[in-house]
Image (cartoon, rainbow, N blue to C red; front, side, top):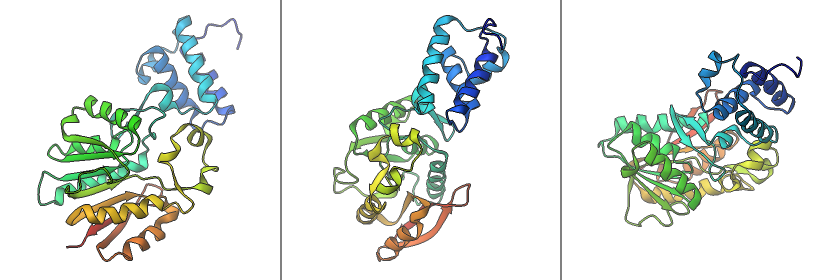
Length: 292
């Protein structure tokens, strides 16, 4: 293709797809489309009706900078400042983990619990809320539930607050800066505890994809040498805070499945339910009920 040819939308997408592919992107075409749509200030679907149009110089400059950063490994979600999760759009920055499809299973399990609960006004604790994706989805889809969303990171809670306000559920989500339940009022009890805690071992951190390892918050990923350090405390503290019959739902690293189930089985306060598998048929969501 001659360099004299105009840099139309179609040409930009093709060149960028090839460029990102050569730099190891897993989904180069999708990345190119999302970044170009962001630079042009349009919806991704609109690109398909403008293939022959030529973006102006400022738009191409903005796009070029986004592509440069993506080629260096920065996640697309951070570059455009948003990520879709459970059909809702969430603001994200490097202060929070990027919500992932596997975690949507945690939301599904929680909503199933709501349907069986004795009261509509379910009291929920979301530990390690990050962007607030889980808390917001639960409040959005079950309007009578009340959520206490906890995170150790103040900047992460600021993002969660922004997302709660964006989706109109800030009045039913209380945000608390805390290490698990440490700063949550001691007399507060819950019907449901949900968590996507850090569960990556220290050894595994160095083997993660570069975009995760370099750009996402390490404290939200790495648990310690065993990978269960946070989960161990979560199990003990949740048993103290859940009402009898209350439910604990925890996303896990599939490699830790048997270890986490053994931790729960060794504590007489818990009754284990079947683990939920993700779309790849890997154990993903641990379910346990607080004994009466």
